[in-house]
Structure formats: structure tokens, C-alpha cells
Image (cartoon, rainbow, N blue to C red; front, side):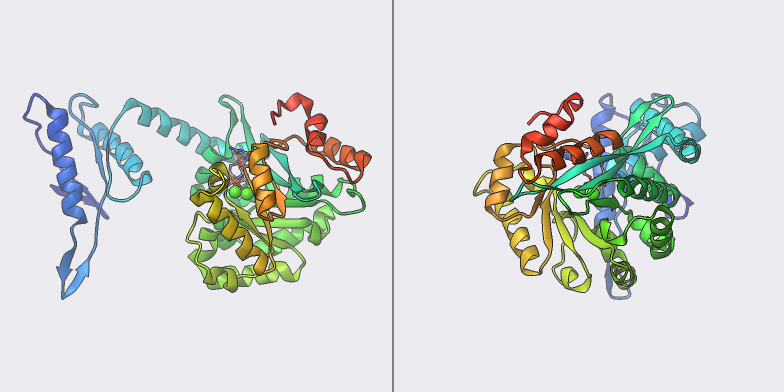
Length: 376
Ligand code: C2E
Ligand code: CA
Ligand code: CA
């Protein structure tokens, strides 16, 4: 056993049984359990815990340095899957690490090259079925790997800090696009932009947003920023200050993925908010009467009693739509109406919404974007 540096330690142990996999499992389970045992120091009970990454000689590598590199990749995976886990190296981890490294290296150039682009997903008023606004969602058209999901590259951008530049790029694109949107039946169409916790704390978000608004000419009242609960909880006082400043400028604030984070209720009191987005997880299993149904219902009631607008995301079926409407949801977003679409398709939807005037029915958006393979 040796200390490798910082909070990293290396264990080397011969595997003696023919069935070394079972032996390894026994050792690793034992180590993780031992690390997770509380210990006492100066009368204080301490919980330390630890994660473990394993590489096996000679199966994975033959040199010490390469073995360490492999175990480090396994350790990364173990940490990703939560505290107190262990993982063993697999080739797949190396491929994943290589792809990750490549994306990390290519990201800055891709922002400059405009390989990132933004799609827009409509948000529809549930009662009247009127188009109200769009959420901006970023995509990466990578020169070699093709289209990459934000679920893969946003965490990398957050880790490297590039999310600050990328976030500003998306914000500018979204504002520029929204400026050109005509009114919908006399009302201004909103645009929602996702903001990462890192952007909250690594830059002067208020100044950036105001600069982009003035450069693009978008009315502040038409912009909404989506933040997650966890972003706000991290440094609640600072976050509240930022939100207050944004709202003083007329910018709206929505809490994204509501119900999946800490969801402390005092949080709703502490922060100035305009709307809650009920997370897709609750919408998915909305069968009448189940727990997810009750949670969705409670979130809607809670939001409304606080004077907030409540929107459900990930609505895919007519059944979910009707259930949510029956429990008074304000707005709906999801594949039922449309997936995120290009700037051109977005404009076509608005034009169509105006042609049909008040009767914004769900077939409208489906008609507007037939090439998008929308199935409802
Ligand atoms: P999110 O903010 O929760 O965005 C909603 C995600 O749900 C989008 O995935 C959207 O395409 C997907 N979605 C919409 N309707 C449905 C539906 O009916 N069913 C299902 N199964 N999914 C639906 P997408 O575009 O892959 O984005 C994933 C996440 O990446 C977003 O989750 C958001 O957290 C993040 N993201 C996307 N764009 C940005 C951005 O510009 N900045 C930041 N910081 N994060 C972004
Ligand atoms: Ca969002
Ligand atoms: Ca969400």
C-alpha cells in the first residue's frame, strides 16, 4: 500500500486463486466497505469513504505506469457512478476516455468554427393549445463523430470551463433568432435558454446577458433563463443576488428539472422565480393515481399557489397531455407537439400558428414540420 499523491493511494496485491475474478471482487468489496466505516478522531466520528479503480497485470497492461493509467480510468468511472463504488478497467473505458479527450481538445475550435448550432422546441399553453415560446437546445456537429448530444458535451464544457464561452454563444444565437420571430396572435414569443451552474459563478452573468440583449436587440421580457435547483443551492446567497438582478431587468427565471434535485421548499421562498419545469421523470410514469402522478400534481399546486407558471417537459403521449391538463398544468413541452427543430422550422411554426389564429391545435405543429418525423 502506498500514498500516490493527494488523496490517492495505490494497493498492489497478487491474485492467487484460479478464479481471480471472484477473489478480486471479495478484496474490492472489502476495501470499499472498510473505507466507508466511520472512524473516530478526537472524539469526532468521521466518515471518509473512497472509490476504487482496478487494473490487472498482465491482462490489461504490462508496465507499472500503464497499469496506473488503466486503474485511473476505472477510478474515474467508479467516481462517476457515485460514492463508495469500485470499477475494473475495460477497453471501452479507454475508448471513452479517448473520445472525451478529443471532444475536450476540439471544443474551443468548434465554437470558433460554428460547429455548434441551436435547435428550438415549442412550449404550448395547455388549455388553449397556443404556442407561447421555445426552449433553445444546443447541438454539436462534430467533423468526425457527427451529431453529438449536449448530454455528452455539456459536462465536458463545464469541467473545462468552456461552458462560459459556449453558453454565451448559445445565448447570442437564441436572442438573434428570437428577434426575428413575429408576434403570435399579437403576443411576443418567449425564448428559454439553459444556464449552467458554472456560468452562474464563473462570470458576471448579469453583465453578459445584458450585453447580449443590447447587441441583438431582443426585449429582456422575451428572454427566460433556465437554471437547475442544484445550481442555486451551491451558493444560495450569490445565486439569489444574480436572480434578483436578472429579474430587475425584466428577464424571466425558470427552475429546470424541478423535483429531481434537493427540492428544498424553502428554496422556493428564497429565490425570485417565474416558473417551474416539472421534470420528465414524473411525466414518464404519469399513469393516473401512481406516485409520479401525485408528485406532479403536488408540484403544480405548489407552483400555482406561489404564483408561478408551471410547465411539464417530456410530454410524449396524448394521455400524458390530458392527465396534466386535468391537473391544471399551464404549459406543455415534448415530442407530442414537436421535437427541437431548426431555426427555419421554428419560423414556419410561428407563421402557421398565426394563420390558424386562436385554434392552436396539436396537429398544427405536426403539419408545420412534417420532415421532422414527429410522431404523436
Ligand atoms: P433539458 O434542459 O432538460 O432539456 C430537455 C431535453 O429533453 C432535451 O434534450 C430535449 O430534446 C429532450 N426532450 C424534449 N421533449 C422530449 C420528450 O417528449 N421526450 C423525451 N424523451 N425527451 C424530450 P437535449 O436537447 O438532448 O438536451 C439535454 C440536456 O442538455 C438539456 O436538458 C440541458 O440540461 C442540456 N443542454 C442543452 N442545451 C444546453 C445549453 O445551451 N446550455 C446548457 N448549459 N445546457 C444545455
Ligand atoms: Ca432546460
Ligand atoms: Ca429539463
